[in-house]
Image (cartoon, rainbow, N blue to C red; front, side, top):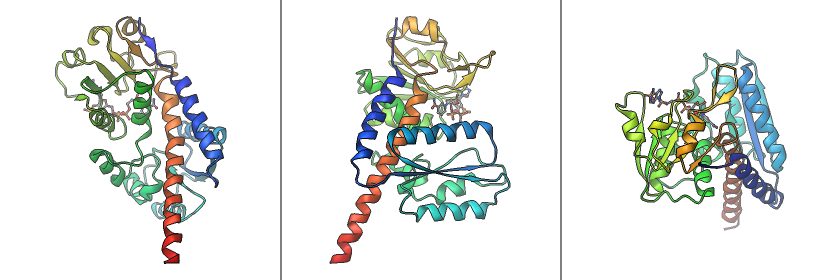
Length: 290
Ligand code: NAP
């Protein structure tokens, strides 16, 4: 029977550490959260992000814009936040209403305040392994793997899913830790033949019970990123949890696995952004005196 990797517990430990650092940081750490329109799911996410900030002593600034906001209005706000010294991190809650060009908005965020790590500069830095921020979900998965004492080096890691926010950066982080990585997606043939070879299997598909026990090798580490609703409307992952936990060595539950870690990583990135901006300011002062 698999050991459960308790995401809530690991997230609480990470948050405790962040709270300590924020307390002694020497200046207020600030996160601007921008929400456009009235998407109920986005509202829930934004509220929980604000609550998380409060818990660790990060000041959150909410900018709630109406559904009919124009591209220029949102760009103007991003520029204003880029220049606001109280704002260390900027998060624009996705999805945006249809009239807005998401890509242009994300590209307008100062990469040093890009706590979601979606800006092409940060994406590129992840590729070459020289990064300040990691996207929250893959970063959270790596923390969970480390918390279980699992070494990635030399392992066959299979990631199901190749999205820009989860699958691709996930694969890259496993590669940076010397895993041998295979990425599967909707056009992959004989997927279970591949997943059965995985020492570490990460499922980021978005389909309930996609990963069944016959797709998993005995003793595999199984990380379930999926966040789906079952027929009763309850949150569930991509993994057929009970049968798979009979075979795996470690498994993350849903809820209580990757989700809480994703939230904790946003706080970590915000603190990192504050550290970056602090260094810059020190640099500026130094330059001023020369
Ligand atoms: P996404 O953009 O929809 O990507 C899903 C990926 O799964 C795609 O690469 C797709 O392949 C692949 N896929 C779909 N059907 C497949 C099939 N039958 N066989 C193999 N691969 C298949 O989703 P995402 O944003 O990466 O998110 C994935 C899941 O993680 C969702 O349930 C989402 O809610 C969840 N999530 C959770 C967190 C968290 O904090 N826990 C954070 C982010 C996302 P193609 O590229 O070929 O279409």
